[in-house]
Length: 555
Image (tube, rainbow, N blue to C red):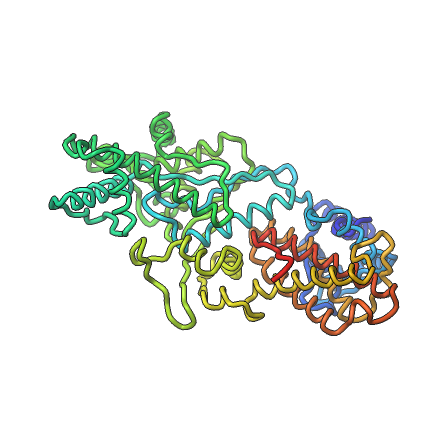
């Protein structure tokens, strides 16, 4: 039995114990496994007794006791105990630890992967910032979270596609075009003002210069609609190219950049309106068309089509999601900013009206970021106005630190990003601490080779020689890794990997600080410890890869 299959092994034992204890109906349900917070509580915990007890109306501890009595100890599991009033806790045995090394050796970069989401097809849409300027820090947080989530989902066996929705047909891009024209005219010495809802950043001057060079001053003599359309088309392309470059710097690549304009051109926005009409939840009032969203818990009804005949954001969003559903995904994940929560609620209500399976639509909200240098707040950017851009952040603190720090908190939590700490080469910096552990393991393996030893995982690792408490703690950390990856994918919370990698690095630091790996005892012990070093290096690299962070061999 491979270590990566220990989850299946435990679930099979629980199901068999349920059947033996007479809980046959519950045995068909999914068996949830958890990681105990304290090592004294075992290596794997199962809370199934609580669910069974609720349906049977009996104490969870009584159910847990019957399950434990029906699970015999063997080479894989040393013992099984009850705890916490109903948990069934498993303590792994010698064979499980041998299988751990076999699994890390045989699976390598795929150690930690599973098939728990096999058969699922995910479309993950994230960032989707308006093409009106450079990507900002809050976009960077969405990028880090979205990309890491995609990696975790893929590691859990799902098919994953990344998509960026380009709002290139709304009022924002029109205001950008008018802002560019104003800067263009100002550059020619003409009086011109940026619109009230326009854009002030220095980048607008650059766009104006580029538009003037490409389109020529003769454009300014054309009618207003023609001018706005041609400028809009040019600047949107320029900004999308810039956003792609910024994301490339952040190591985020999308499978598809979906244009809102295509929905209008293909008539899908009109189709969405017609479908809403047929559903009977559209009414006319004061020359506008409204969605009766209060019927579905909204605080007020929402306008679908304004009095001027133009659609609000709701219809293109509906058309876009209808298109998503038509592509055959089993899960649609929208990662949005905190300012889009109301929009997502309205969207979900409208999709229900259209009889779409809204259970397949998941919305994850990413909260705002506060940048600081030490105790000072960072708020200004010469390029974009009173904001800080993704590119500026990466250029100052580095991609690895930026991605790791964005994942230190759940997306629903506000984040204080300390730029001084992020770029410091000290063990107080969490990403540096983990990367340093990986580099130190690499250095140790290189030293071992120089001493004529083979720092690798062999098929006959002497697990029984790894008896020191620090060695056992490291092995437990390595054995936990597949569970954490599964938890990150199923719970849509890749941030749990940051803490697991920190804990793992801490255990590794304590191990090689206290115990001499090479030259500290018999060669058999050195070989066993070097196998532990090689396995630890692999797990650190795998965890960092899921976070989108590099694993340097030297620092």
